[in-house]
Image 1 (cartoon, rainbow, N blue to C red):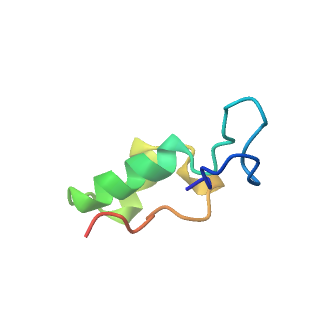
Image 2 (cartoon, rainbow, N blue to C red; image 1 turned 90 degrees about the vertical axis):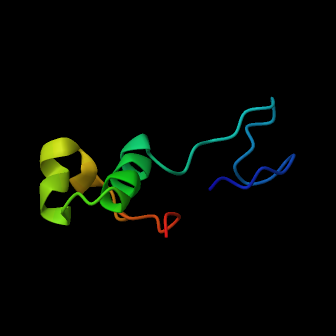
Image 3 (tube, helix red, strand yellow; image 1 turned 180 degrees about the horizontal axis):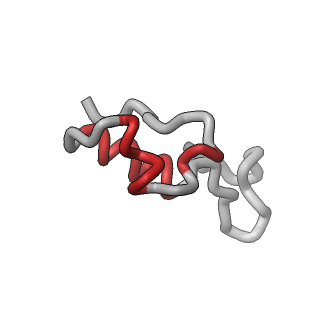
Length: 60
């Protein structure tokens, strides 16, 4: 998650934060929680191979 701190490392100085997590990473985490096999993730999310963390671990 971006550090939401004024003048922090992810702050662009005008009230915007630079994202550090892709929507595909969120989506794959949710898909795995719903029971999708990890081998099926590239079919559902073709860009998931571009990211290091297909499971962010926020769904237990």
